[in-house]
Image: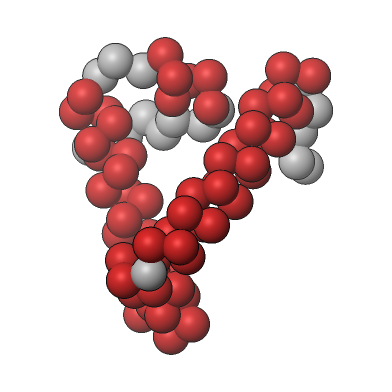
Length: 81
């Protein structure tokens, strides 16, 4: 089965298909698992996010900031190419 990927932030915001969102989350989790298996530092960071509330909040802010930048670029017609 070929999964339709959610490619933009606006698609994510407007998506109401729970099965698609769950498939996307699983794909992301599987990819993160593969990275963690290959790079021990990534596994450490992932574990640190689970164990350390301050680190988790910092990473959430980092991701939110990056997401806001991506959305602004999307609205301005910019790409990361």
